[in-house]
Image (cartoon, rainbow over all chains, first blue to last red; front, side, top):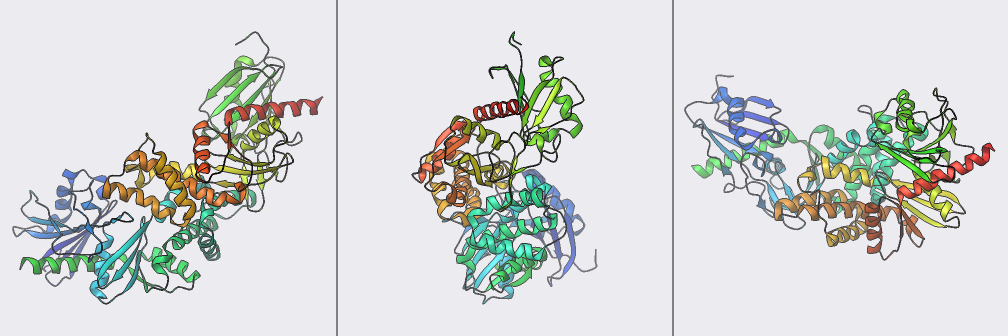
Length: 304
Length: 304
């Protein structure tokens, strides 16, 4: 708590996590509330009480705007916020969905995700990070990579998202390393840079062999005692390498910015370096904050 | 029970299942015992009592030979049966591992799996099916595909396994359809032949896009209500298509036999048909039985 006055609240409400930032009128962060009450754990009727409980100390008789981004707007979320369709700007004053709350102290909005018709694709949450990045770098023309459970490659031109493509790389890594036969051979800790880099290069050249080389990690362990750290690095390298082969039409010859958790952005930057491709990295959390601020500024202007 | 005399017992002891066939002196099956006490559920000390309990009615004062194949011989199994190294025949009289049991009524043997040094690969159980097939078709020259959790492509020449290659296709299908975000979009039942065939052809041409097209199934569901049956068929087609791209050096221009569960062999045959490649199909269970019989005949000759 602080003596400065909470003016609005920005929420990143994903599948597994809830993160709320309390801002004053100068967009300075007064407090952060983090819980594991992600959208995946809640029924539609539970969203409002969960939000009110989390930000309770900042509620008063003056209704406070609460801007939410992420999976909270999915069909299984609080209320479905219909996708905007690319090509379009990542944020649009007219598309923020006003949620009618029963608690008069909150005035919640959900920022919609984006969809693409062909090939069919969707995002929820990344558009806010992209908006944050473009707010800081409005003239950016190039490609943004947002690595995560479902990594996005996004083509940006003239302040708009032209097209994007999702790869299930992160989710496949999680499943293969913890739920498949590879869990016996893949370590939690340790890292092998050379193993990672070789696996990236190899999967880029032979993506059709990934399902076989995955099993090869188990076989190498059984036949000649491959280390768990190397298996982990090679698994990660194979999956990212195959993704780079598939996303090449996005990144080849482009300015590339990678937005996300530092551990992931540095992994993708290292994989691109194997191809002699440079990339800038920036923090996903910072870009979410910037995107929420930018959405608030747009909304304020709209209502003034 | 029967009045004919149990002479030996063959066991297919995999990760999740135990299957024992009781044979008389003419290799006629007198009884079958099936349980879910697979190798994955047992500690090393539990294998002997599990076996004795399952085949108890057939034990007498004359020790009965029990030939076991499959994961029972893995490092985490009853006792590790060291891999034979390809190129070699699928079964070898000298490599069956005699297990010293504390119960004098059984005389157990474990048939070893096979390993390959480069690329590193392993199999346990499939070698017995291959031996069964070669016992029936000794002059076969070509490629055997054994679809399953870890599908094997095996090059056979002059009665020997020359080389083989494993793909994690089955396990990836299981994980993606039941544990990933695709579980919301993939149905248990129903089938879409055209969706399967198109996905096979597409993944063969663009295996580097599989991780993206997988997410595309979820997106197609969200954006335009793709049916769960079609999503399932396309998921299966994508993974098998990518496997066919990777295993092409095995099957191109070869005689192809697919050994396995009828549901799987017909799926692989349909995928190969998309490439105008014909393939024979044969039952995995029958081939396991034939392989165990063939192993017994070899052992008997050896001990006579």
